Image (cartoon, rainbow, N blue to C red; front, side):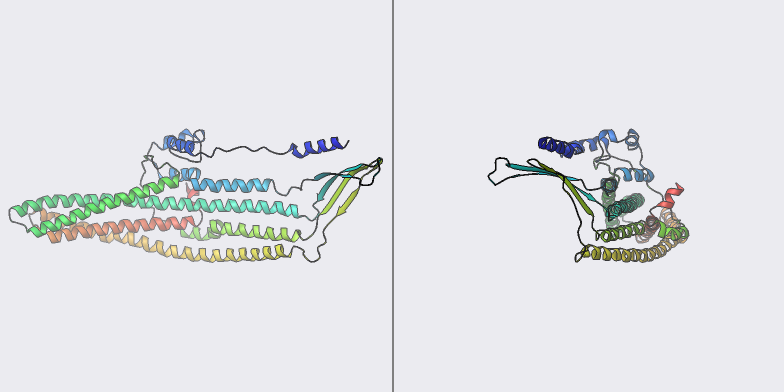
Amino acid sequence: MFKKIVLFAAIVAFYGCQTYRPLNLSLDKDLENWQNNLIGINHSTGNVPNEDKSKLKQSLSLATAREFAVRYNPEFVVSVQKLATAEAVAENSGLWQDPSIGADAGKVLIKDPARDWTSGVNIGLSLPINGALAVEKELANKQKFAEAANLKQQRANLLKSLNTAWYEWSALQKKIGLYQNYTATLSGMLKRAKKLAEVGELESTDVRQLSVRFMESENNISALNIKQQQLYLQILLLIGISPNAKIELSPEPVKPQVELTALRQNLIKNNPKLILRKKELEVADSAYRLEIRRQYPDIELSSGYVQDLEERSIPISISFTLPLWNRNKLGVAKSEKKRDEALSSLKAELAKALFQLKHLELQHQLAREYAQNMDKNVIPLINQQIKEVNSRLQAGEVDILLITDVMERYLEMQEKTINAKLAVSQTTNEIQAMIGFNEIEKEQ
């Protein structure tokens, strides 16, 4: 009888257990798939849609890059996995403790042939009457929602970083074209200046001055090209594309207008950091409730079967702890202060968000007005000067100092205009990130 009970207990104990599944820790296959797919190091060959692979063979727009980033960015995929972990915890939390089963045997020391061994089996069960399991389940769900809010913030940060890199790359594209035109003009002027110097109509110092500025301009182009390549690699990393891939990117035009009134109204509701702080406060509140519930004991029931020669009995026992001097004081005190800390953090984040929005509004206004003034007033004057210089060149008047000064001023003003428009795009990006790009996605 005793052996049957032990065998039955063993079968029950191991019935619901899972088995270990080994993992291939080699990265060689992952790198090979990444090189073949060009995108998604966390995705196997079969998990990357052919439609996405075909899009990489075309000119990639920023809108498409955003879609790829939230699916294939390696770090964002890790955040998605963390949310999946939180969901698994929430699904499997709040369960009763497994019952315990035990067996015991003892040898009788009294020299009595009729009484040699005693044996018994007992089963223990905990009855969760203090309600802690329900609060534990609630806490796990709150932690899941907090992880979802964290994922939303990570998504906003990812899109903001991608936009920032893309806008800078687009601005560099314009600057490179500007310097290339400037260098081509200097090259033509340098050739003509050398011919004039050969016939004695121009000083050799002017020729050297043009040569220095020409070489300096070429160095600037080389530096801009290297910086653009670095931004290109940064963009590939943010999207999740292999660094060895050859992807053509489409420059993003500047969008200087942003509706600030709607952003202010939606700040508290949609700001990812505020949402995360709210969820963290809810988690801290549930944790405090859980520690309060843990002050009160659960009932421990146990029963069994004892055989002692001809005597057989079924003992029953009940027990619970007495909350006299411990009463989970440490857990309650710590969780209460953690809740106060989370509340203060939420209010601090709100204050910080309001000041940050106000700062960005002023920065956006300054950059927008500066860019508009450059386009409306300054650039037309510089263009007029360029026309006058060309007219003098056509008439045979050669004043190297005047020509180079006008051209450098033209280059400087054009570059400042590009920087101002870039600042408009970047501040717009910062402001839109404060509401998680919700308004942008609604418009699209």
